[in-house]
Length: 372
Image (cartoon, rainbow, N blue to C red; front, side, top):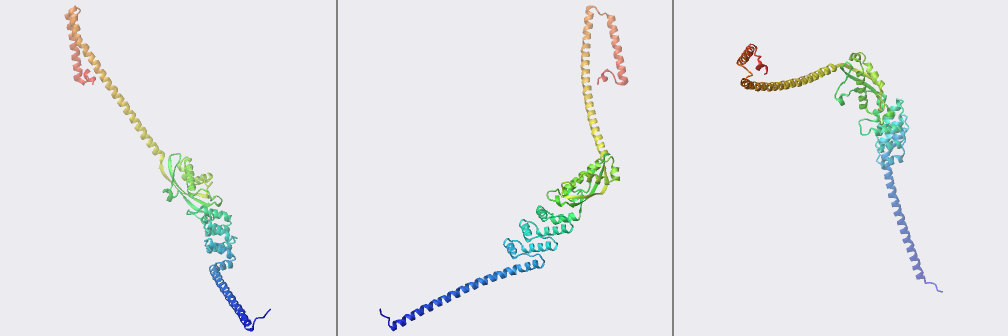
């Protein structure tokens, strides 16, 4: 077995050293490339972390210093769910400072349901300070129930704490200032009442509104005045109206509790009984006139009928009188009537005509006129 020559051995070692140097350079470049990539990724992470810290740090620090801490995960989750984390944190701070242990998750859930977080928190704080029992779930339910109306859960709590006065009737909705009721003696009186109510939080959801309370109170006023024997009794004791209305329980199934009903004004409106009697008398008069006219028309018809019958009878008399000369002639021919008898007959007829003529000249009520 032979050995390579010296020159060939030197070339072989040189070739091996070159390959090893190239591999080292390649490895060095690869290491530099990966380091650069790691550096870029690290810078990106640092920038993102800096932006997140810059965005949430102020809010997080405010919550932390207020003893109402909110985790970074909750803040980032609110951002991803498009929830205004600033409003949620401020509402939680308000609740915690007032002694209400509300979590950010509860407030966020109510916001996502479409509720007003600020009003709910303020209502809970007001109820807690006034020692009213109002759980968070009920406050959220009331807030969602009044959504889209002019009322709020905060207004409901404030009305429950500070009762308000409702005008009965309400001039803005009904257009009238007083309720008109009629006593048994027919005298109408105008009544205006003021109803003091406070919100019943237990029946606020599904309870009747102010319009129902006003309608029921108005009905009670009309009933109370209508049961009075005289309008004087109403004027002397207006408190009897409020007592009767309160005894009827007009606030049942409503969103309010009636504290008092005060009669603000009572005055005499009109004598409805006399006016109705006058109208009835006028109606009776017209009926009597109509009946009298009917009787007059019937009498005229009977009179015309009698006149027609009179004319008919007179025609028969004339017809019979026309047959008298023929009968006289026949009696002459038969020898049943003499000349003296005929002369007496003519004298009687002449006397009768003379009397009729005299009677007609004196009073114009002869046989011919009497028939007219």
